[in-house]
Length: 350
Length: 207
Image 1: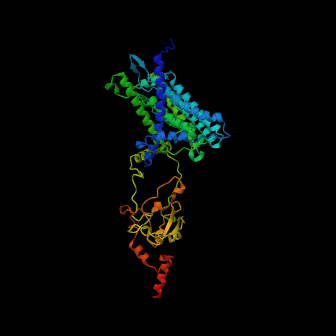
Image 2 (image 1 turned 180 degrees about the vertical axis):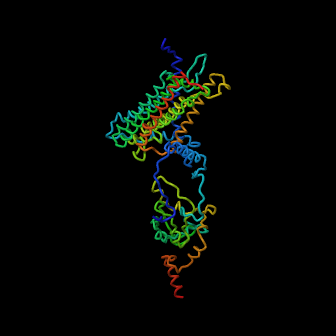
Image 3 (image 1 turned 120 degrees about the vertical axis):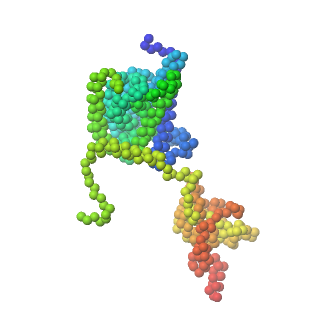
């Protein structure tokens, strides 16, 4: 039967979905704290350290503050789209977590439980699709605000995300050629031991990483927000929790794109030599989740490190980089990898 | 053209080399620099717990001194208010009644004495003007408040406590020169409008 649905299946999926949802929110909340701490440390400051020990309750305080703020919807704004924008942005940010394999399968009572909400065989396409819907959240919010700064920010966001999606897509095509699959769980499983995709696709990783920075609107590609020119960019008119949703969704995006980078290029939940020390599949699964999160946290840190080092691109520089450098580079990468895959066939192995 | 100073630099807008055009070496160098700051000692001081050392003659929150017996020294002459360039000081004088000798040193005292800490520029002129050694600036910092009105400090906050161990030490701001200077009645600065005192001076001149 195609859809063999049992109660336990639904139950595990619901538990998994809810925990992915909660973990995404939790990691995003603590990313805001981490961001402020990293920024402070890189600038010889201490960062938030008043709310709780080491300021660990700061995200909570920020959240409460956001909720307490007065909610303003401008008179001339399109009310429904104004509300719809941040909701859509948050929705797409949370949707992407569904296809990421968080760890190897658990085995309970002889039953294999994959730590992945939806093991779709076109996971990569799903990811790219959902990510590109994300731009609508910004676009709709910026347009509905009826404010020139919001509009400019939204336009920048749209053009930036569309431009960088091309290079990202082409670098992902190269990755798909190397791995021979569109399923994320398979991509992750293939990278056991030292067969991390970064070794086969270093240039692809570099392009993907730069594009991921641009897709998540992080510095040095934070032109949609661009405080110095556009007040706040697309969220200029937003206040209270709707602003919170935009800011928060950005951190979820950062978390998810770190997870995607780790899964695509850095072995996902795999860690070399771990099989030698642990053989129990459940322990392997738990350790796999830990390793994946270690990699994710490293990439989140890298995102922040870059943000607090590099200044923002000018708009024409951004477009030049996207269209004249990254796209040709990714095409070159594809042109190199295609004949290799053709001759050697299937997966490249050293 | 001859340069005016030897510090001028010739700026050339040269083409970037290939490596420079890549930007990657510059980016990596930048990230190395920021990371080196990550482990540096932080410049921030966690203020209320830790404080920066301040000078002993720091001009902070004022104190209205009492004499050795615990009577207020201020006689509400108003010289501090006149001297104040920010017009932060106001006061209302009152006459000392019988039985209040242990409270007020002179026959006249300040029933109300207010300093607006938002107006005050902590210049210390009030202290210089005071002929009675009554007002001093101390090394205490005026704390923040939520309401503007709370910055108007009355006698409850300004006058030092009577208990000997709770007195505010101002010896660092009383240099020998200041004390010496305040003894000289011939300077108009040290003259008050106290009629009895003016009579004294007239008598001195007559001699």
